[in-house]
Structures are given as C-alpha cells and as structure tokens.
Image (cartoon, rainbow, N blue to C red; front, top):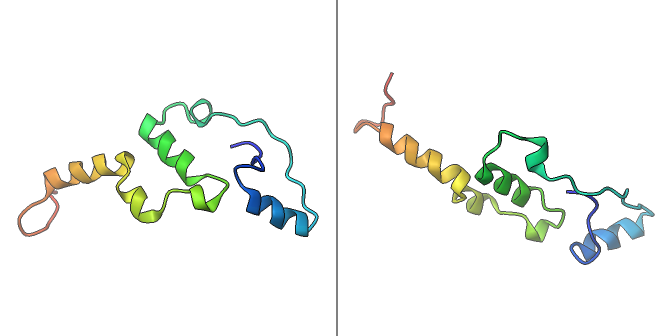
Length: 88
C-alpha cells in the first residue's frame, strides 16, 4: 500500500493535519511479492479492500460478487443436494 497520496485521500490528510499527525513515508510493496502463492483474484480482492480512501474501497456486497468469491460459490453449487445437505 505504501503511504497514501494527498490526491488519493484528501480527507485523510485533512484529518491527520487537525491532530498533528504525519503519515510515515513508505514505498508501496506489491502484495504479490509478499503473498507469493495468492491468485490474481485474491490479490485484486485484497488490494480493493485495503484502499486508504474508504470511498475507494470495495463494498461488502460488491466483494461477494468479486471473482475471488464467485468461483467458490459456483463450486459450492456443484455439491448442493435437493434437501440442502452437504455431502459427507
């Protein structure tokens, strides 16, 4: 994620200024270099969830429609039995 940029999150900088907080300066590290076995969909989901600006974060309903989760929902549908019980 790195340090947020003023143009990406002006409200965050305004709040920080009011309390005398200064964001530490960090260069972003790509998540795929930290979580090497994560899928592209997983990286995209985490990136969208971790946006500094809350207005730019993925919403809970939108996250349930994200490809990272929808592929698992499709997999669960394959195991659905007419009475709703899961196979053992």
